[in-house]
Image (cartoon, rainbow, N blue to C red; front, top):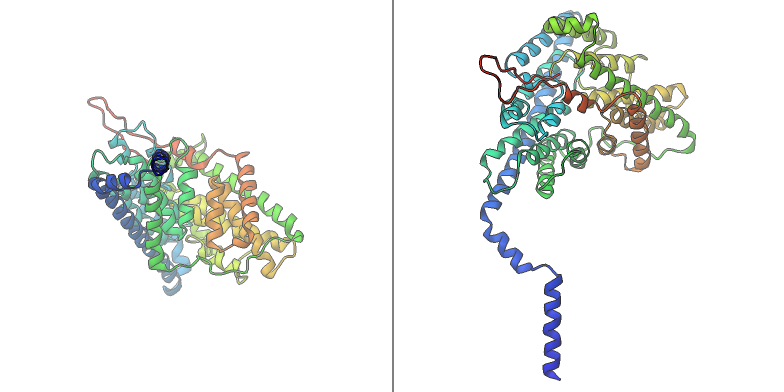
Length: 470
């Protein structure tokens, strides 16, 4: 009986070993794989550096915008001087970009989307994403803020993070299995996570926007890098939302039709904005497109002057990313003109059309908040009851402009601490994105297709063109 029991026990142990993981064997393999741990440590160190650079970019951009407001408010006749200051600084920023870092033109997200394609050589990829471009992008975006343009810094941080993380490749072993694709995805998503203080938003952005054609081979390491960069931002700015704790509640039935109207209008507006940006960058057989092609600096000066005139009309409420007006609208303290939404829309489009390094995430949130506020006023909804409509407008316009509804939903939910209206925000993002798709194709994919890439093997005697943003 003892021998029979022993035999059964040994058979049971063998059966368990055949099904369960070999814990000690796997642990031993991990311990002896020293070089793999070094590679992982390198990636995580660069994730920290990405977070620090994004934090520095945030602080520099904010100080540049405050300097613009100080110039306007303290210099005698500053509100009129802005009519000369904004075009001049815009031209300077564009000239520096075209002269030294043409790959930093525009948002930066199209460059990352194109750099993730497998048909590029390392030299072609470095013209779109590199550490040099990342450092230059930080300074140039701050220059646009100093000019008083209606731009955001969130989209550019995608290119900034991708360039920093891709630089880690030179320190990895050949057998690490971590390629440029995984590093750039990790860096781009880490930039979103750090700049919005929303790590989950960075993860969703990586999955929705950057991994459509190819999956992530080291998903655990990529997610760890994204979260680590987000933690760096949290450690500097604190674990708080951009717009504080707001009394955002679930939509009641009397807000159903106004909320539906907000989603539809935001979808139409975001789709129109996306189409305008793509068509403007592609160019049409019209006088303005010809002027932009032949005299880009003069055209940028014209765009800067138009943005300055819009700022003069709105008391500079349309300048910068738009966080202050958005926060004021959410808190019910906004003293904005009735045409703020339309003028912010136009100022953001003109700023992007000028060609300077500029993002549209934060301005899209401001425009969407304006849509929600305007419809609330038209339907007679005031006070705290208007806050859900403003939040729906934010998520709807951002989802429509970028056609990334999950990313927009997660970012807005975390930014306004709107967990009480999760389903409403998700429905608005999905509906607005669906309406936008009837008007335009995904903006960043279209812009990525417009990028000019230097040939891998240029013919002898011909100059090699540089990769330029649309």
